[in-house]
Amino acid sequence: MTGFLFQLGGPMQSWGEHSEFGDRDTTAHPTRSGLIGLIASALGITRDRAHPGAGPGAAGVRFDDLARLRFTIRVDRPGVRLRDYHTVGGGLPRHRTVPTASGTRRSAEAATVVTHRHYLADAVFTVAVTTQDADHEELLTACDAALRRPHWPPHMGRRSCPPGAVLLLRTAVDDPYTELFDRVPLARPASHTPPTVQYTSDTPFPPGAADAVVPPGAVTVLNDDPVRLTARDRRYRQRPAYTVVRPFTGPCGGYGTDYLSALDTYLNGLRDGGTS
Image 1 (cartoon, rainbow, N blue to C red):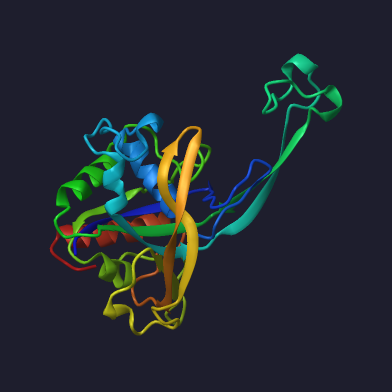
Image 2: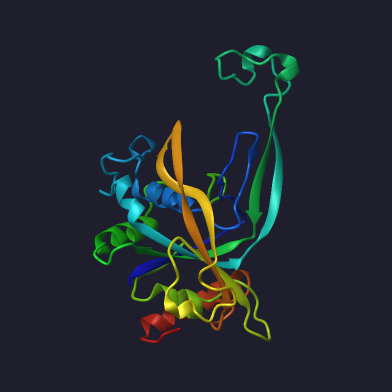
């Protein structure tokens, strides 16, 4: 099974699953809809084409094609949850207050709209992207090329949350699971004993995950599989989320420049013919 690897790390990220206007949540890891949206943006798929049956985006890939992608996420660092108390519309005359659903304007007394927006701070996730069938090499190639040179700037759930210095790690990886489980440096400090790391996937884990602390059959349900992502009509369906927690035997890279150095060592080792 071939695929590619990318990484999501930065000051802030947010992955809503059941957000409403007044309370915009985040899950503990990237959602399937968020990851597909990130790749669709990189491919130049506009909102009016983010639905079944629509034509291709700038890179020649259709929104329908992205349903074939499969994501396995390693939680390098879970981050810290933050809540932003956010207001809009207060202190303005009526003709400048927030419009209502009926098209009128709020009164000055009810002008202020309060929302709570939730984020993950200092979180890092490494993502392996594969496809449901082995004959989708062209789709993987188009997606990793788009992440290397995105049509629009990528963001992690919200446009105010750009990724860090490293996004695309590796392309055309023969065994993405082995890279996640044992080789790509972990974005956390080293410890005396192998750290336990959580992995989540939208497909069952292979037999190689059988030594996990949590059995590979641990399953939850998320409502984050996008049917359409058009501007005013976003629809999702439920899908299973498989989770394992297992010891990580690869290198721990630490923080900041130490981690970038560990990634450089890993990638240079691959160029020199090594495995780590």
